[in-house]
Length: 284
Ligand code: PAF
Image (cartoon, rainbow, N blue to C red; front, side, top):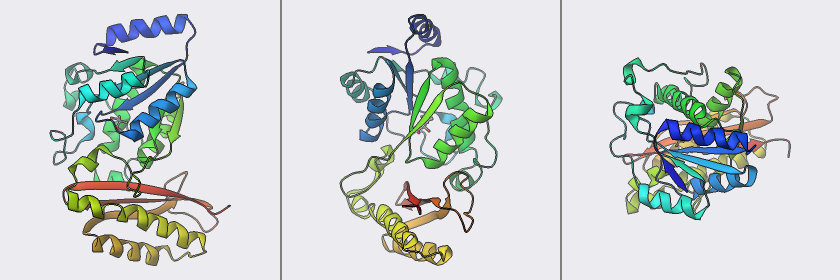
């Protein structure tokens, strides 16, 4: 595995791969890799001849009161995991190169609508930061395909919309969430949980499973279901940001005939913001 931090050698390598007709899969990350990320890499390997992984903690997607400085950085450990999986290139760009004209002057990409709702309402500017860095990384790596976890479901929809709207020439794959044995969705932010909080954290997925069961059994009083679910999370000491039942395609409130739904949830457990989601198909 080669580690590259500069854009010029990455582009040279990209040209060589193109000449030899190799397909390129890309997995963008912010590092502190867990099984969820490694599963994305495994999927990427199954689909393409070359796999590029990036590690870049993107300042543009953190709000002023968020955890940019504290975000876990574990480069040596991450490198060993990626090497073991047979990744071809680890791209670790420097923030000064990525945002060479400064964050304030940076041209940005914004997917309207999708970026402002749900998580976007709680984290203004977050999806603009995500879309901008992902667009820039796509321009640098020029992959044929890219892989993202479904745990960040809204992020995945924002990226798919960006790719469609800007006619980008690559395929986006969403990969199912990898969970701990007690159901907690894997996330780099789980490291922030104290031992006591860690025991309470699986309540979020349990609540989502309960909502799916109720909806599949025919309940349509969504607002009552959501209020009950919020109460359960409060009892597990979570400060609920949102629980939303939405159409899977548009992330808007579902119409009566809608059969493909997603329930999205975010809550603070102590200082840790947990997010998760569950998909519901009423056709099965
Ligand atoms: O999901 C993440 O880790 C980040 O949002 C991403 C897609 C790497 C962009 O910084």
